Amino acid sequence: MTTMDPIQIVLDAYREGAFPMADPDSGEIDFFSSDPRCILPLDDGGLKVSKTLARVHRSGKFKVVINSAFERVITACAQDRAPENRSWISSELAQIYLELHRRGHAHSVEAWLGDALVGGLYGVAIGGAFFGESMFSRPLEGGRDASKVCLVSLVNRLRARQFVLLDCQYANPHMVSLGAIEIPAQGYLVRLASAIDLKSVSPFDGDQ
Figure 1: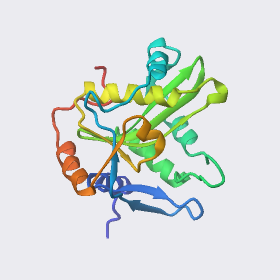
Figure 2: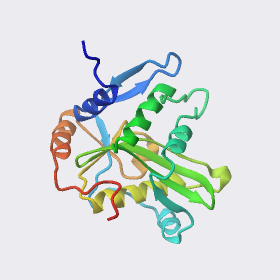
Figure 3: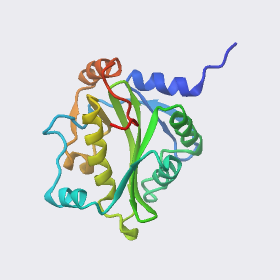
Figure 4: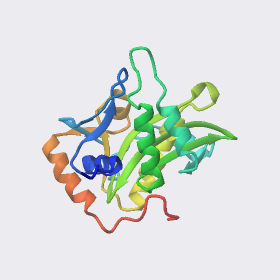
């Protein structure tokens, strides 16, 4: 019997509206979906950028780079935030995302302050859909608003490449403040089916 490639299993799950998460105690990976589903609309009114964030983004304080330190971004995102907010990114799941990155499916957006990585995010791109997974910032190292700057850069990049869906999975106050909304799962699946079949998008990591 042929064992199915775990990377293909994960990609197929995304295509069907599910996403992987690992249990913080056992490390066991399972697949989840949410109803309602959280997305960040990619139209002009979708992302909510405060005057302060817009100023920081325009200032060039952070050097924003694509895919230069994917493994370091994963490692940072995998850190527990608090005893009651432990990471769902196990070492096994991190290795799956690293392989997805090597195969051109997973991407990171990084904010640098000099030689220091002070913020970033990562996700998976399929067709015209980008599945945002996690983000981090290091305010004690000068990275206040760094992850938000990465999100602005991500949205600009997705728009330029004609992506049509930015999946955020579960809503939280932070993402809602930035313009994320909840939609019924069935409506999400309709959008997802259209997005992953798009042929007109440009590669996420292209030079455009």
